[in-house]
Image (tube, one colour):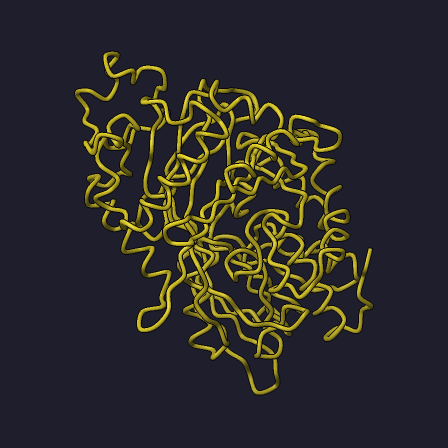
Length: 448
């Protein structure tokens, strides 16, 4: 049995930065476990960075204030921005156009946030992973290794039982950090149930990905690469927001638990004629059914059936008329559908058949407001892809060091409900590293 001081589950931004920080603090015997052969979580996606505590960070969950969050953002920023292909895409200082957009949004009762943003593009994902791993000198990576169970032993240590290359492997550790990312959120919840680690259901985000000819959105994205518009709907009082905008990008599918969801990204070196962004409705559930993960899976299953195994896409022109999109008229010039060429081969159909009516109401109300702020986005050729679902729904009560009710078990990142994005996940990993190093290894907490 191999023995470690710290075993980190997940090699995304939360896990990597926890390992980086533990090494800086002088903690030895660190291992990172990941079920994939070339893992890195969200780092392999579009590589969009928001250096603003209002985006992707839950200050209440992290138990820090805005000043502390801003400090950690400045600490983590150089790790990303020194990567050669990472470039700044939104400069917020002294940009009068941003203030004009903010004013127009306020007239519509919409909040507009323009954070400092950097970007490296999906085509540089593996390079940035290699770059960040280059900061690690002593950490062991156990890749292609799936964690099956975690057992707390009588001496307070943990046995982590795994399957590696079809063989059983057991690792022992003083401390375990679970940072599996969004794709591992369901696994983490099941593991927590078995270990009696306290957790509860949080909200998920359910919606669509909008793809349009980029000329309609360039008026915004020329100044703010990934603009954040936040709506509170008048009919239901629900929160809707834009998320993950990709100027010149493409729509693509992603697999979650056997379901096909939609997402979007952009390459650094090759652009399309379109822009895409997510428009997502935050959904919370109460008794008697509070399982937001299962609710999201139910929606995903409906679209899987309706789309014949693929996501569904619908033209705005068809949506307005209450008509499903069909293959025969999908690129009809008579209906002005030719202006936006789809970048992803989804199944033409009707998104209202798979999406709850309340969510459709909220999305459409928000889109009509957005069309007043950015005229033209509801051109008949604009595309709605569904479903886009973000599972951040299992939350773990922790102390300020991100330690759970079970001593020695820490959590970090999106899969534990501590962040919603690369920067926030990385900072949560640092906070957990500081906590475990101070409590279990006698290392002074590193503030800078």
